[in-house]
Amino acid sequence: MADQTADEGLEGIGEPFTVANEFATVRVRKVRTRNGERLEISSPKLEYRVLLDPVQLESLTWQTPESLSALLLDPPRTEEP
Image 1 (tube, rainbow, N blue to C red):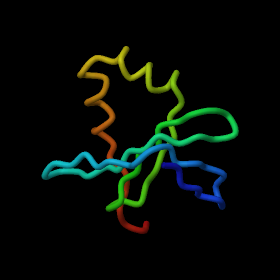
Image 2 (cartoon, helix red, strand yellow):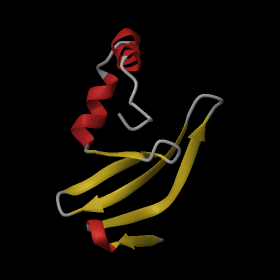
Image 3 (cartoon, helix red, strand yellow):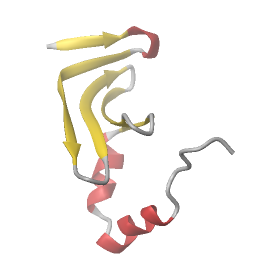
Image 4 (cartoon, rainbow, N blue to C red):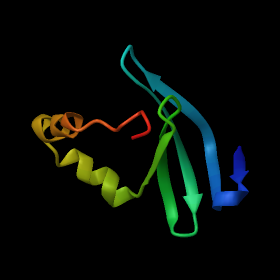
């Protein structure tokens, strides 16, 4: 089943799913854009979203646990400055 997010030109492919623990919740879905398929990962609580293409996703597999943990050193701001 596909849904259309017309204002962004995204076509959802299949059903989104949620991955959560006590620290974070993310919603994941596969979408089709004018430039091909992407994985949309969003944080409902923080209202952030990113679209990752296959090369960006594959690059995650090249990372060490240490390099991924380094991303957590500078968390996003959740308050207005």
